[in-house]
Amino acid sequence: MMSEYETSDEHRPVMWLRGYPVYAAHFVVLTFVVSMLVTVLMNLFKFGELLSGLVFLSEQVLHGEVWRVVTYGLVNPMSTSDLAWKFTLDMAMMVWFGREVERHYGRRKFLIFYGVVYLITPLLFTLIGVWHPLMLIGETGAMAIFIAFATLYPRTGVFFGLEARWVATILVAVYTLIALSNRDSASLLSLWATTGFAFAFVRYQQGSFSLPAVNVFHRGPKLRVLPDLDSNESSSKNARASSMAEIDVLLDKIAQSGISSLTTKERAKLDAARAELLKRESGQR
Image (cartoon, rainbow, N blue to C red; front, side, top):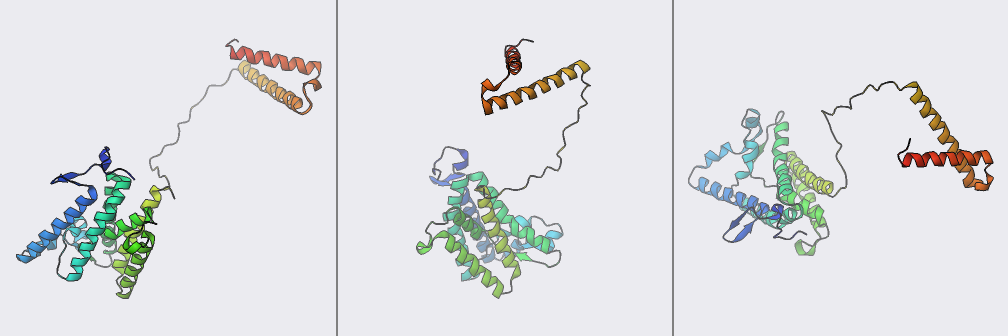
């Protein structure tokens, strides 16, 4: 693993907060925590309706309100204890496991990874929204981050000593069963899209597979018209090729029966070929 205080910019903190380093994963968590506090305060002072413009609604996105694809995660209501516990667990997972993923790949790749995880669901929901309106609010992508960690370090003990790979398998299975029992196809799609991407991202970075190269604007090499060879030059090259073929035959004969098997004429031809080769190497013509 990379050192936490690696000199490379990829492994430096995004900022410092009262002497504590804040890395990219921590900064994402800090953003969500601040958004949760703002959401709670706005609901408390009866300004919660203003937040409706940030929630993802596929119909509104298709009518031009594209910012909802990005802002949906900033609305985190704490209206029930279940939502409060889920948010707290998500933030804890992003702090612990997100930091490990960032430490392994560096800041840039981590932010690219998280950005795709964050956008996969609203983009899919926008596409489905052409036929069936969908809504999305307050999702953080923490599950996908844990899947990435479990793919990177499958044998690491996490909860109660269980290996990360088994915990990831259990969690995906449980959430899948919950979605199926609730007939919630949208949540099921989001779960499998984000966790599937997280697994594929890590495996791709590990070299388990490669993506096909697509060169839409690739141009073939230009064809060049070469001048006709001079007849004397052509004859000389043909004679040289014929001579080399004869030498190859002589070398095969030596390899099989020894040099003593050559006739006087064949030895003379071999000596002449060797002399010609020495001339070429010395730059003579």
